[in-house]
Length: 112
Length: 114
Image 1 (tube, rainbow over the protein chains, first blue to last red):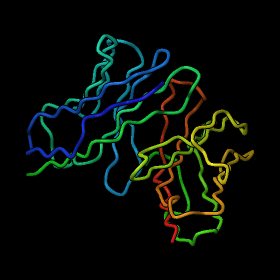
Image 2: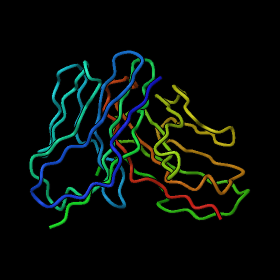
Image 3: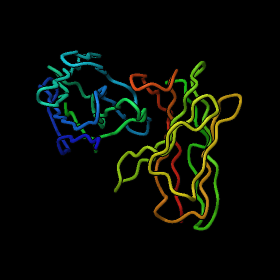
């Protein structure tokens, strides 16, 4: 089947720390991979995406590389800010099933 | 602002009642998706419409139904409500129906069933 596994949260980091949120997937067919972010009280916003193996998605200092050999799409940021505090969702879509399959979400809190 | 609008923002109702949630997609987007976010089930896909036609169905209960109108706005109808239907309901839209299309999410409707 299609599923996404994210590292359990919550994650608490100090400002300027390095962030990694792990995401692995199983998929029928060749998936497209996404990271969405949900700020408090808001809807989900697309953070970045990658549609084929070895593609790197990047946005706002965040990046993730589509690794087919390890079925992973880990999210990284070199230096987090307080404003990055949010819930991060890894997601995939597959041919023939256009909806997104989401992970459980990882809550990140960045403290000054 | 994603360009996707949802109304109402909050809804409080009683068990057994029926409610309608409304979604307007981004200008030009033909595809609309509905998702449910709850504490125990996470984010789950309910149903997709593309240009007025039902395209895909996920874990949508028989008590729930949806439609997309000629002006492309969509409504999600929830009937015979139960306590467990309390959740955040998101609408998303994309230009086309394809797998690689980016989905843009609305702010959600928070439903509380008492």
